[in-house]
Structure formats: structure tokens, C-alpha cells
Amino acid sequence: MKALCWEGVNKLAVERVPDPQILNDQDAILKVTLTTTCGSDLHLINGFIPTMQAGDVMGHEFMGEIVDVGPGVRRRKVGERVVVCSFIGCGRCWYCTHDLWSLCDNSNPNWALARDTLGFEIGGVYAYSHALGGFRGSHSEYVRIPFADYGTFPVPDAVGDMDALYASDAAPTGWMGAHLGGVKPGDVVAVWGAGGVGQMAARAAQLLGAERVIVIDRLPDRLAMAERYMGTETIDYSRVDVLDELHECTGGRGPDVCIEAVGMEATGAPDGQYAYDRVKQQLHMQQERPIAVREAIYACRKGGSVFVLGVFGGLVDKFPLGVLMNKGLTFAGAQQHGHRYIPMLLKRMANGELSTRQLATHEMTLDEAPRGYDMFKHKKDACVRVAFRPHA
Image (cartoon, rainbow, N blue to C red; front, side, top):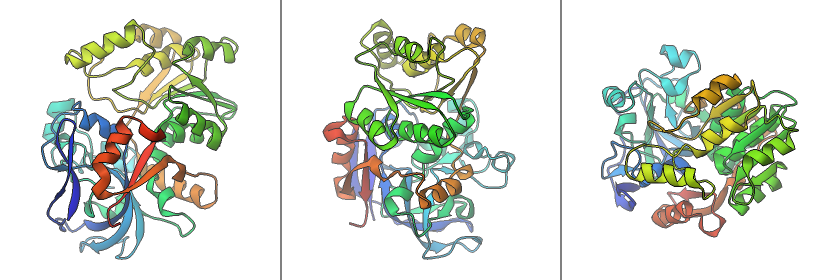
């Protein structure tokens, strides 16, 4: 079958790879209908995530049709249209039964490599390095789904494929940030990043009752999308000082909840701090550019909450721990516990509360995927996400 493979830093190629097979009795095989780019894929392409190997199949956000199931699969059947959570959960360990699905104890066969790389064992995830399981990704015609009873979710008839696609990762990740960030009715919420996850975090905050939601980015098309589809306020950090603007529009107090949806390759205003982070990252003296995280901590009101959704992989420098502690902030972050949110999100899509299809600004065949990633990486033609149709 055809698949988009990682062949090295900034090298992608569509290649022929073996068809997936049922390996365990709880597996299913999915015919991929739609699969999409994600900002965290860029960390793989740019070489910031270790333990990638040439030939690894990319892609972790997807939906499709079940075409085969193992003998131990009880809840799913051939022919079902499903969305698949990007993280893999066994459904039985302590973490899964406590709705901490991305921390599953049993889904990552390379747990020792994860411990050596990260310092602890994390759950498996499709196409996100061998430290996170070495699973083949969804930018392919077919993909194997471990623990299919728990990681696949039937799509209601009222929900189109393109909406269902973003219930795989962007929508549950964004919802988790607003929910675990503690958004309450009447809150002022600031979201750093107007990509797919940031926009979904903003919409989640609205649905949880936030009085005002402010989205921060530098790309006019993404800020315009947040305004158009959700009616949020926006700040262009390339034009104004974000801290001054947030304090001004909140009467000097700051947002109640700050959500970081950018990650390890954040950009920032062209000042000394951004230059410092960029140089240290390029020299491998630190692994991240935590510009948005720092800004969120400084911006948040005293006693407020900061939640980190962007992907980070290691250590950062100049972390404002004293500000965090003395402000009395609640600080948290997580990879998405999507199994906890996906059924609820599909219901909201079905009843018209949540739309995600607008995130797919471009559609392409799988053969066009390298060009699609070039557009996505370099933000060409107002690209927010590219959705690939492997069987087109």
C-alpha cells in the first residue's frame, strides 16, 4: 500500500509499504478515509523528536472504515465508520480506568525506550517516534488499530467525515485544555496559538461558559478564522505587547485561565528572549522554545490557571518558577486523554454545537502529501490544516 514516510530531517516521501496485519486479538484494520496534518508533526519533520527511523509512516489524526477485526474485538464490527483517538489506551490499566488515557501502562511496547528518553513510561501514539511505540501512522491507505474496542468511536450519521476527522486529536486536545484548565462560566480565557488545537480550545472555553475568549497569534488568516467561526477577540503579538494588551482589556487583573497551544517551536516578538531561545535550541543546549508558556505565566491573573497543550519533549531554560509560585497559579499540562472526550464531542457535532471542518483549509491526495506538508509548515496560501484522502 502507499504511505507517507519520514526519511530524515525535512525529508518526506510517498512509498510502498507492507499492508497492515492483525497482530493481536484486540486489533482492527482501518481503511483510512481522511487523515490530516498536525502541528506536532512538524517537530518530527524538523528533527526535534528523537528515536525516529527512516521509513516510519507519518500521521496520527484520522478516521475511516473498519475492514477487519481480531477475534478479541467485541464492540466494533466490519463496516463501521469510526474516528480513532491518536493516543492508544488499553482500557484496563490504572491510568485508563482513571481517564488518564495518554499515560496508559500497556499500550507502548517500547516503554523502556520511553523511560530512557523521557524519564518515565508514556502511552503509545500513532507515528510519533519509537519511544512512543513505533506504531505506523495514518498517512496510509490502511492502518492497524490496537485495542480497537477502546480507541475507535462510531461516528453518528449526522456528522460528516471532515468534522469527525478532527475529533481524533484537535478537538479533544483543545477541550481537555479548557476542561482541565478549569474554565468556568464568566471566566476570561486567553489562548496562545490559533492553529487547529488553539481554535478548538477557544471553542471549548466558550461552550464551558467563558464570558470572553482571547486568541493570540501573528498570522492574520488564523486570527480571522477565530473571529469568523467563533467570534473570539484576537491579539496579533507581532503588532502589540501581549502582556500590556491582556492587562489593559481585563482591567489590570489578567485572564482567569491561560491555555498554551503552541509547543516547542514557538515564535515570538523579535526581541532578545526569542533570539536566546532559538539559538540555544539550534545548538541543542535546550530542547524547547517555551516563549508562549512563559508569557502565559506572566499574563495570568493571581490565583489563576495555566494549562499547556503544546507538545514539549524535554528541558527549558529561564522558566519563571518564582512567578508561578508567588502568583499562586495552578499549572498543568498533558498529552490528550481523547477517549474521555471524543464521544461527547461527536454528540456536540451532531447537534450543531461544534464544527471543525473549517480547519481543513486544503484537501489533497496522499500522493500530494509532501507538497501538503510544505504548505502546512511554511503557512502558505493561508494553510491551517491539510486533509489527505488516501484512496482518492
